[in-house]
Amino acid sequence: MKDGKAGSRALVMPDVADMERAFIVSSSHLAVPGNEDLSEFEFALTVVNHAFHRWMARGMAAAGLPDLSALDTLILHSVNHRNREKSISDLMFTLNLSERHYLNYAMKKLDEHRLIRRERRGKEVFVSTTQKGRDVCLEYARLRRICLLEHIPQNREVGDVTIAEVAKALRVLTGFYEQASRSAASL
Image (cartoon, helix red, strand yellow):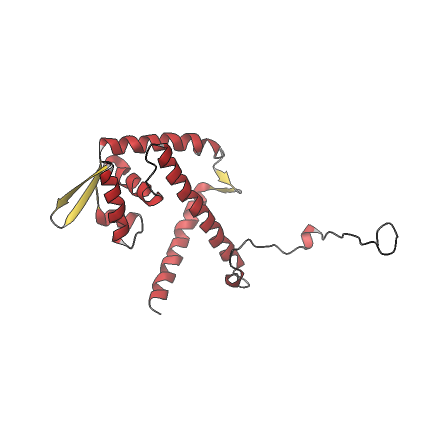
């Protein structure tokens, strides 16, 4: 009762310490007891992945190439990495691509924009960036510095964890998901 009056309802707020932690998940049927944290991680990973892909596409559009996708952008930056040519096999391995046609389609687009050059040596194809490709990568990096890097905390922490620690954890989790993929393929 509120103020001692009959018929009034009192709003009782539970003590925060008594509340169970509510996990933020997209699929409650996957949040099995004891593994809710993994479901929460997967949902967060999905959301951050989409945000990252959106950034890459919009960042590349701001750099002057609005029709490049996130994958096209990743491939261009990988080809440009350390200003050394890369083999198709190296690109697929580095980017963890399992379908070569995704890489081929992206390279066709990059070719059309004259951002890369390809050279066949024996059975292997090697890819490198053109001057235009290197210039686009530099412009993207400049925009990334302005739009993203200036907003990252100086202590490099997000949620009391350093970005380097998050990256390390993601590499470890990648191994778990790779093994799960292999297991599922054998079922």
